[in-house]
Length: 383
Image 1 (cartoon, rainbow, N blue to C red):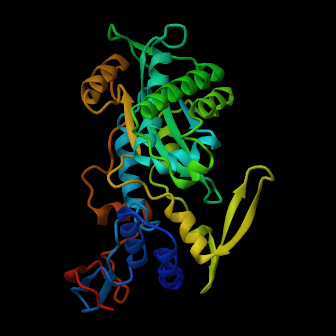
Image 2 (cartoon, one colour):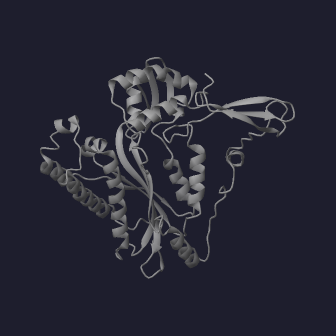
Image 3 (cartoon, rainbow, N blue to C red):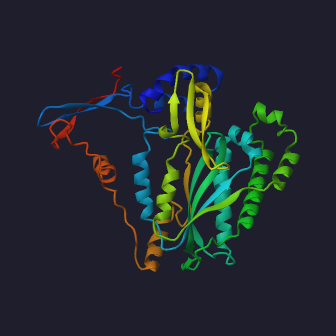
């Protein structure tokens, strides 16, 4: 995707997919953007060498957040900005996963239940962290929503980076030990109870929609039985990684923030009818090669397009956007100074490409002079 060798077969398969499945407006937009990215259909930019006259044509990118080609610069800027907010405490990577029984209902009510997942996870962590038995302070929390498994199956879960320290109500800085400070069974139990409580409230207020598939499962008719079984199910919460080095946690989370369901390097081949891609199998510890029809591949990919405007990255605790500046100012004062600063904040895209990827777009491929300059653009298709 975002590659002509991959995009072209999908043009024809997408027409078949669109007649078979109902698409939302945001799915239509994502599909068209990805298929048009860097093809010239979104217009082009021209650069011209001031020394030898060489002219280069650059196809415009789509900048859609679901496109595999358009996330690298955004990710680097995000990671750089977050590093300036890191405090001198351990950090932990926590993953909250919803049980499989909920997936049909969640997919039918994406905006409401993705938001509920964010809300319940943050409230669970903040309430337990506020307990002096565990931390007794408000930590910094960054949550990133993912909806996929490696094989592109539907699997809603949150990747969370939480600081092992934070501010008390009295304005003191508290640090935890190197190990995660909340017992996982306590965390999972509270998360499950809160989620089911708020899910019940949504059901009682008739704010949940039920798809035909949900109705086949009798979710709407047997709600009490459904929630009873959810209460008896073990909800998966695990501590995936512990970080003791400053900034390492943010670098690590950067792998998750702007990731999409599948990257181009995992797609092995695309024919007129089939797509093959690789997926890591956690059970066998090996990579499987999965081959499906192009229509099925598109279906698997499109189910991970989030609702329009939905914020998949959210901040809580002392990183809450409203009070973040004041909180960090106090924390850095208590720490004896800020440890990390933004490196890329004032860099242009050209300078960022050179600094991070060693790509010099001012360098002429013909005369090797750093004299390539913008020479105009067009916003209409050249194809």
